[in-house]
Image (cartoon, rainbow, N blue to C red):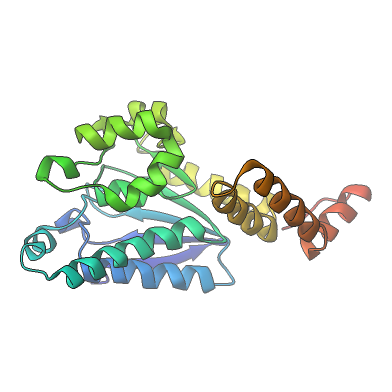
Length: 257
């Protein structure tokens, strides 16, 4: 049985976590499978939008028991390499030139919550649960913290990371952790329709540049960010997609991306 399934439908690539008997818990090897499949989606010319979902009752319950037990006997270097391994997955998703959507059905906890929330868009069912439970086992939500504070703000991030409390989908929506709550019987179809809309209505080059800028401008001062933005604006005007889009607009033609 493949631990991660991959399929493409109408330019939407589905990366499906397939370790339901372990609640899709993250081990070193499982993370490697996810990374390899994600690289496959990024390189796939037939894929424009990536959806990460899961089989089973949970989206992802965080680190698996075997991994947690191994932490006790790892050397410092082994623990650092393991941490960097997960960090690379999050960074890969965050910096991907393609739009990445998480479709959360069931619990997304600890590292699994990080996997869900690192995506550009996150849609969940009403009964889904979210939490960064690390502090309850003497651990820290270290890697995801870098992304989470930027996404939902320090106040909401503190609430989640310092208590370790599980929150429901409505609270996650209020915090800005997810984009929408969709009934379980409709989420598959509605996420697919949303992904297809992005495929049809947006430029791949524009998406890639916009995501790059979102990642960069937050690290710059106001003046540096504006100078960077002006240069990116200049570069975008030279792109093939921009030329195509302006010509279509001026000639009142329907665009096909």
